[in-house]
Length: 99
Image (cartoon, rainbow, N blue to C red; front, side, top):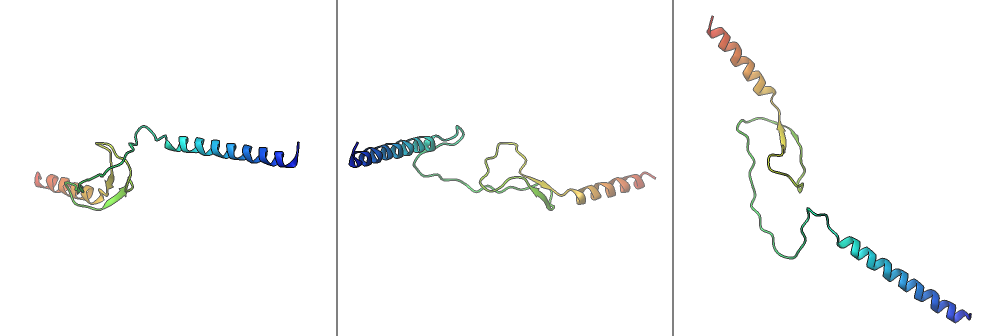
């Protein structure tokens, strides 16, 4: 086999391997998980305010911006030390009122 034929065969094999690898990479990349939708268009949303029934400090935020959440999922935990102290005072006052 001449040197020219060897180079042509090598280049053809290189192009075929590279093209096959690129095709496989594109095919694998195009497959999204079931829970993610894909398409073109415009998404509009509304900002939702989250509030508690009692004021206080946030102890921990359990999700990050952009996380997927489900209905009923706990998003943050409030620091309840002040509420517990108020309950203890109320119980103490209640006990003193009956004496």
